[in-house]
Length: 182
Image 1 (cartoon, one colour):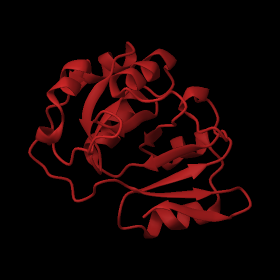
Image 2: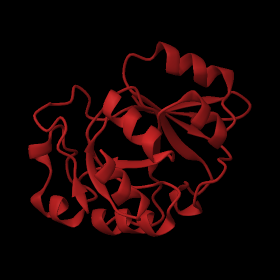
Image 3: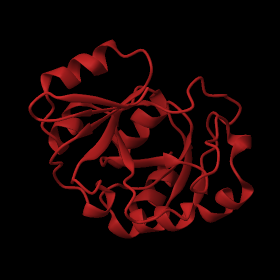
Image 4: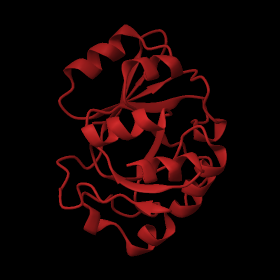
């Protein structure tokens, strides 16, 4: 795992298994690395990306978490990404036009350990070119994507995800909620 951490710390990109699909990731606080991910995906720069965190503390360091968000995280059986207002310490390029950011508190051991050792949030965007189908397993990832990232993680390559994506729920500071994706 140390080699993955060194790649991420030096501004590199990785292909890795998340709690949903295979993703392209980088240190979410490194703007050059974030730009590389946009370039790999051929994604418009005005489209936001989500980030993964491994702990409640890291989540609270980045955003004010409304009580309803904790309840949703606790009861959700499927991975859930929550879109929060007014994040702190993240590059504006990661944010949606309204300044919000989608964050998922990850529950899989590999990602938790990776983010903890990196000690930074991790970008997570589907490992595909914009508009293509999301990869449920490593073999679904285009060989072109594999060639474009700095490192393809070896763990869990045979596992097929149960989820083609997370639920996405936007929560405003006044506790309004909108389900963006079930």
